[in-house]
Amino acid sequence: MTPELAPEEPLPRRLGRYVLEKLIGRGGMGLVYLARQDELDRHVVVKIVKADLAKDNPELVGRLRREARALGRVSSDHVVMVHEVGIDAGVPYIAMEYVDGVSAAALVKKEGRLPHSEATRIVIGTARGLAAAHAVGVLHRDVKPGNILVGRDGRVKLADFGLARLCDGAPDETALTGAGDMLGTPEFMAPENAEPGILDERSDVYSLGVTYYALLAGRVPFTAQGVMATLRKVLLEPVVPPSRHAPDVPPDVEAVCLRLMARDKRSRPRDAGAALALLTGQIPAVAPMPVDEVDQATVLVKDAQERREASRWLDKAERHLDEGFPGAAEMALENARQLQPDPERLGVLARRRFMRSRVPRGMNCLELDRSRAVALYVSIEPLELPPAEAEARARSRGERLPTASELEAIRRLRDVPANGFLTVKDPPPG
Ligand SMILES: Nc1ncnc2c1ncn2[C@@H]1O[C@H](COP(=O)(O)OP(=O)(O)O)[C@@H](O)[C@H]1O
Ligand SMILES: [Mg+2]
Image 1: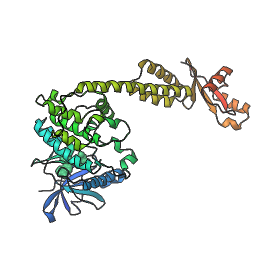
Image 2: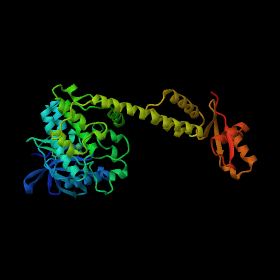
Image 3: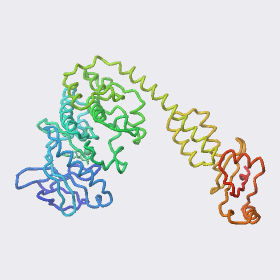
């Protein structure tokens, strides 16, 4: 086979004992090559992080190392086998078993939705690989059709453990950088990813369920522009059952698929092993489930939660406005807008916030009553100045001393240091 390295990827043709032949994948973390290992007369796959990428982003090398560790730990016919981890000419790489075939994503892209028996077979193979990972405390965290390899001979293997987390108590770099938690693929990410908290095996089970859905229906259940928008749908929108897109999907297959991707993780099988039992019929397929009612209830609960949460943000915004922190108020308002705020109250507070924004910048502003905004300037330097001089300075800045009632209002709203020198500035007209 002639080497087909793309010209924009200048690379050593050889890494360790492997001759790179062809770029076959390019993803979140680097490049995937088909390579040849002559001494054993076999093809392998070599996954690298390009040196320049690695330099700017040490996290990627961490991911590669984590992938190798996770793969090394899991042994299953349904997980790609790792041969070797190495570094050559500054390029870290993993060499692994080559699966001659296509990803399940490529399969769906080429053929549209798959016959349900084939979809089930692929999902069962994946569940076996995932169960082997869960059995040794490895979470995959990026289960999706693009990471499932289907060999020409029909073998199914779970790949791409680049986001895997080892639940062995060792510090997790992704958790430390805070970057890992949102690294999955939003369409396949479990709803609990929206909230900080501990992901567990059931999050992988959810992704497996969405994968099943995608293979059966030829499309993902929820999609939108951007991670947050997608997660919002994942959280809130009712699932259109796959049989709506693929009428020949039998009810028990559909029930299993929907059960795996239940919104509430407590309704899902507790790990991939339990999912497997469900998929292979060892646990009876749940009778045609009251999916719609369950979802409806979840949506109602979520709505109520969002309204409560929004009202807390509005309280915060109001407090910040009262205390004279328009920037903080704006952030709180923005958070409320993402949820389901009471529109009337949002309007009132947004108007108050708007009034603030017309006060000159650099001022510490305060509203004395709901109808009149006054910019407040708590001077620091004047502490060392004789009061008369401080006052003169303030006047030269267009400020004046507060009236007695203003001073009283100000003291009600915020701490004024006893020896602080306080001036106010009237908002510009209009
Ligand atoms: N062991 C393998 N055998 C064959 N093809 C592979 C193998 N590993 C990866 N690939 C191909 O490369 C693509 C990207 O690999 P993946 O491990 O998912 O990397 P990324 O982290 O970039 O997503 C896969 O979708 C698949 O097409
Ligand atoms: Mg991938």
